[in-house]
Length: 422
Image 1 (cartoon, rainbow, N blue to C red):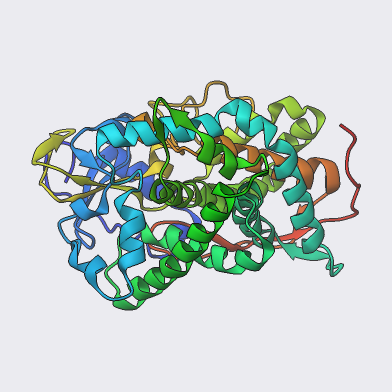
Image 2 (cartoon, rainbow, N blue to C red; image 1 turned 120 degrees about the vertical axis):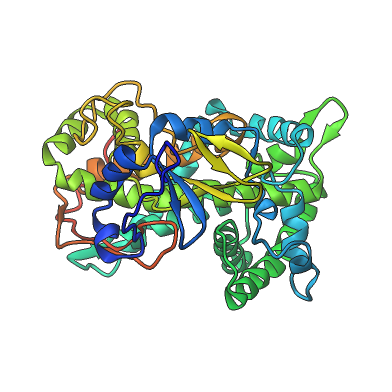
């Protein structure tokens, strides 16, 4: 449908290889001809304009709770043997809590994730990025896959910040991967079973980790300790709420760091003049990260919400239970929101970047994800390998249902310049 509710026939195929490598012609067509488009294959309404995406992110009749999806298998899914752990963590997640509890838990958790608190974590994030990069180049390969670098950072950072012991990290990683997959609409029984197994293992690990920290007479001053000690009047976070917050931090921040950083490296190496300007002036790091996230979004079909009632959105009917999705990559190239939107400009000011959401569901881990991305780019392309170049075209997974992840980004690093002095 277009914005007047008229049926529009358009070959929208986000699973095609051509779309994965360059979705922007399709996005431009949608913005102009069908800003609210009914994607019949998934029975989902797709939004492509910046204005509508803002409405979508803050609309009170659009829920983040996948249980509100009309095709969701419902409570019986979590009643199946082996699915109980998944159900218990989801039940207290920020995606499902009622507004009052959501506000309370978010307020308590945000104390540990303020800009000031995250600045205090920068040393730990830097150490993780340095170690990850050292591991990447340990074999002395002339050309490396940058995805191997970016994929390791977020879960390793979270493990470091939460003080996850080395013997727990493999299991924690499995839980992290399950958590990321769990927020994507999926009805495949095999996939659901794999996700459930990850939650079962993860719940045991998290309970052990939290209990050990609660009873430690001299707990380390890390993120988990701060969350445990966070208090609002008489309230502290319960073990169930702590587990759900860790789940939220994994799902919210990991994808952005992994794929956003990979695309940032790809974009900067395609724009050597911009990279040279960044290398000469590190104060441009923040605006560079915002612009890389805007200019080439790794999202394809994402940000699913589910209608709580029948209503209209931009003149198009939405029925109760229907899925609605914001096309971030389309909205962030909207000419009504950005001057010359197809131009990559690291000097662009006040970028209205909605990558981390908006309103009460604004990403809790946004400050941490931005810090991870900035440190990764700073260390990789400014301090250690300022002469890095692309060694070939990236391989993008066009089968992924909601993202355009770069599976392989071959980069020739050149000589290691060592760590720059602060």
